[in-house]
Length: 316
Image (tube, rainbow, N blue to C red; front, side, top):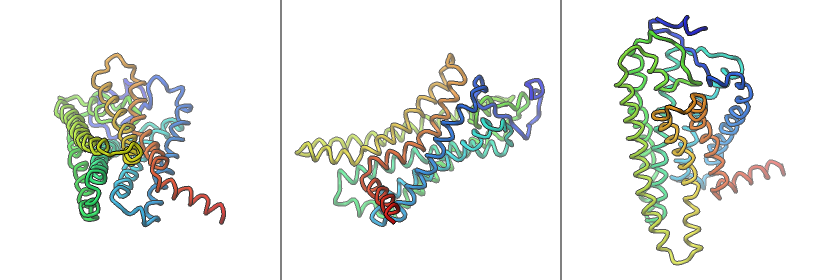
């Protein structure tokens, strides 16, 4: 379908995803790491869920939040990867407008949820290190459930205007999306209307949610660092800091590509489009793969349980 065939449209029911414009010839090769990343992400996050569910000693706040993180990662991966791979493998570029809005909502909703989960995990580490004797009384199962509910509702409500506003605009210029998935700004920019409401709201949510969450995480870790430095021995400081290392690595893996991708999409006028799209994909597909690896390697209880499962099955 050519560009000339898609002009002067009136709210088309189908949009066309181009994948990674400029790298069409390399789509099959690009699909190889994308597929591997998706398989590892699915396997790793389901493994985390299985281990925590099966091992009763892991039924605590930190691991409940870890399960929430695994679920959000599974949704983020599955909402984008199958369609992206179908574009790369089968040139299946069509997507219904309703499906496009659904994908847009899921991606942004669960990204906001994931950010909230990292704040909850930072609060858990703060209580565990700064007030360990009251950890079990402060973070009861009831409190954890309330925190989880707030995290979910925040993501669902804050992102709801994205598809609601996008569905109101008339799309009469083109139905071609120069992206591999329905990124919010890539979709609404096709509208032949004043989209400042969508653009400004998206920008406000991005900086407000990311900024506020990073602020709370920074406050938590400033108190954690102060508590760690007050310990008398180097061994105690290292051991205590080790309980936070996996969480810190996961935060860096999630936020650095997020902030970098957002800044470049908004202000990187001279950055090639294919580079922006690749970075946008990296932000969504790589963290779900790395998070279970980070927690599997850095968390002793999960690592030991995983090794036990493998050796037990091998012996059996």
